[in-house]
Image 1 (cartoon, one colour):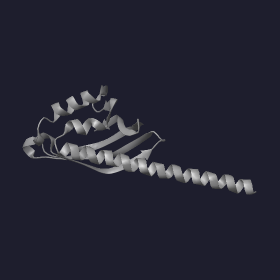
Image 2: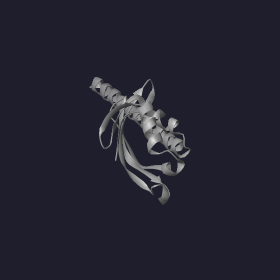
Image 3: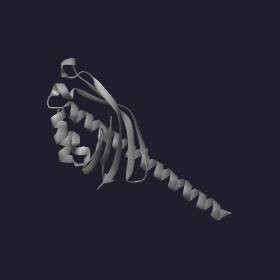
Length: 144
């Protein structure tokens, strides 16, 4: 009977430590996204895309296997001025921890911008983050 209690206690402690680690990763990922918003709003697209893995997948109108440099070129072409970039905000973020190295984030994005720059626009996204060399990076971005 004593062995059963010891095993049960060990399992409970292990589960609690894993949940704590998951919460820390969720906070870290939310911080990565907050840094993305800050970089975007400061016009620093290079810093904005630094959260993408060196090789990643983008899903939008199509599916493309790409590099961080190509993601940067895409954003520079699509949003060439501060007016077209507007001010970025994320909302309704949910972090779903899959395991110790993978998490999925869902949320909404919104660009506030003047009518002559395209007007406000927004949508939803899902991101797959992977912990690569201790850094949470986006390996798949599905934005609509």
